[in-house]
Length: 440
Image (cartoon, rainbow, N blue to C red; front, side, top):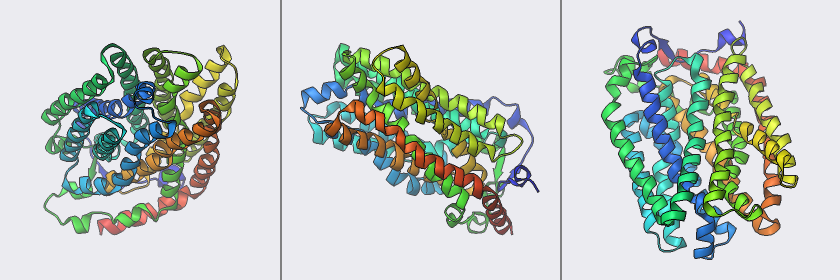
């Protein structure tokens, strides 16, 4: 049996209207919109870094802590909240999360000092904690597996696109009206969008359009104890563990660019807050576009052999590892911009492949929890660690030198991803065992 044919999921494929209906795409659009709101609320802070640094006399380490505390809370709370969402209901959980992070963003607008801003950002992180994992699990449930890498990459790219909107709008609004209005705009947008999501998306309608019938959902009255795969299955599969760790490590450099590019342009190109935000947004947009395109490439190259998806992830890391250090080392000019742009395009390109591997090697009944574990790794090893480490390093050697060293983290990411490819057949066999045990 080939590896491709061996890949199975704990689900029952069902034909019908889900393949023709527009509703799955509406669900994707609304979930994607909330992800935009998530990252707009998270990354608007980067646009006002220069203003806060001056107004409150903050060091780079202080600024980094305001950014990293969100990712830290996401990392710590993703797993437990994903488990709750798998049991309490994904739609209700997503609505509650969005309301919380939107209100917390409004509180950021009221902060009078660093301590109050840190507390408000803490609450933003609590609200955003499990949105990525639960949201992607909800989206994948209404689409066929053949589209999972593309959809995973596109959904995760919402973080970059949301960062672009948050950084650009935040910078413009801060320049025109003051930095507090930047947070106010993001919070209000989130509350309006979550109201629309709640009106359109429901568990009942999702079940009617589900492409993969989760076992416990095919018979609602049956015991969840007998139908749900054990949570331990998410941590005893060696290939899945590699996807978790590799996915987190490859996010390190992308997270650095999301947080520090506005400051890079402000300090080394002499740009004002709004112009620096807009310049940085172009590179952040490249990160998001790359996630979508890399997801599509991965689905195409993995059609004949699913293990090629691991190699695609390694290739994306390699390109960024080569381009970014050279680009940041060169003097300002065309070649520097081209290399930084190329590195940015592939910086988070492995996100789609790693999410697809997690989805294909875990039981459908605990997939939100699986994605929660991936999100935990992405945040602890990437989104939280990256900006903070570079902030601390920047205080010692300067931001430019810190940016040159950040891509080194791709080396352990590539090693783990290559190990995952080698362990993939064993991971498939473990999933088959879990599937048989759960169905019996």
